Image (tube, rainbow, N blue to C red; front, top):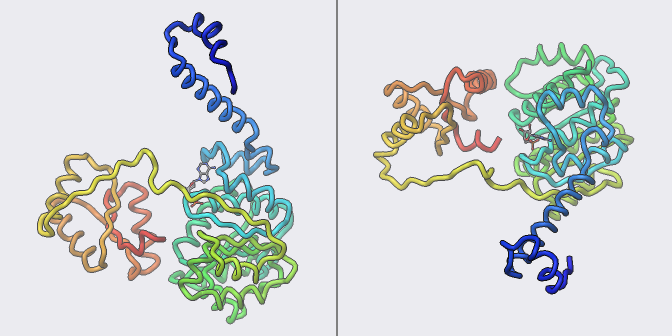
Length: 350
Ligand code: AMP
């Protein structure tokens, strides 16, 4: 906004005498411009409703408490609904999961699954990530009759087979376990119309790409592919190009490292005093629940023993536990039954 100094002096200062300094007015005007920009941005911003998602999805979202789409959702949902491929760069925490699950639910709402022939496939690098995607899918599709199967290691084949034989709309899997089922003839991939490759950079780090390529080779060529990675480095873009066709490239800024509401503190201490200080914090800060990370799995068992001796109750979470033990620990922690979770840094990543 350009306003002449004389106008400020003649018109505005008499109206607001407390702002008699021109520099004050500069400040006020700047604020107006910022507020105005924000208002305009709000007006042009999409809502879940005007992106074309169906009523049942909107109802589920209202119940979950999602009011507005995040930037990745705003960019991806209309593109997925159009049937186009995506090469997306988004990290966990940006709302990436809903950016592909919501439009998938909308697309899959019409049509029915046949036995052993899933209609869509979501590949994730770890069991935990696959389980998280499945959780979101279930929540978002609470008003739909879509069937889902989760194929991850550490869970019995029998249960997974039963789900597959009924027919699934969405198959969520880690690559190794999916190939196991395929080799046993329990699943066929020729009816998959939508493929999601989630966290492709981690798949690459973990050496899963050959499996993913094999799986993609079993799918129909005419399909929609949504490829997501935390970063879109040259290598990842080259890799992505093998799976997608004429994709829309979508990038969003990584989420802030820490939410504004999180205070961070660093305590310097002697190794020997660590446990005592931890107990002190847990008692004096009236901690309702906390996740405590340890470097080594061995430290987890020791810390739990020591905390238990001092009257605290804690569960462990690390990569050496069986899947059912991990799920049980997570559930007990989520339900508030056990207030402390002692986890390895591997668990922290996924
Ligand atoms: P994600 O990046 O998919 O792992 O999502 C990160 C977190 O943000 C999850 O806890 C989601 O439930 C939450 N979330 C995703 N989209 C929204 C939204 N539009 N409004 C509020 N929370 C959201």
